[in-house]
Length: 96
Image (cartoon, one colour):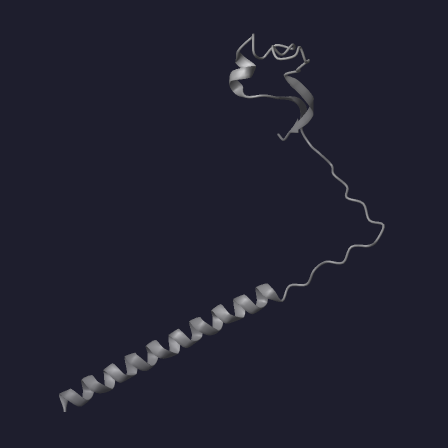
């Protein structure tokens, strides 16, 4: 009698486990199908990308940090061939 009660409880828990695994699998499958089913936005032929940078304009250093700190290597005249080398180049936007 007691053995049948425990067998019934065990079968009930096993059935609940199988049901919960099925729900988890269906949920995972739904997420994968939903992620793959997204539509690609249409862009008109003569569209333009508008960029509106915000923040202050700062200068960006070129070269390695060692070159920037060393006055001989980081100077405007490079030791190899006398080619000009500027440590500052172009304005960049630093977001605030």
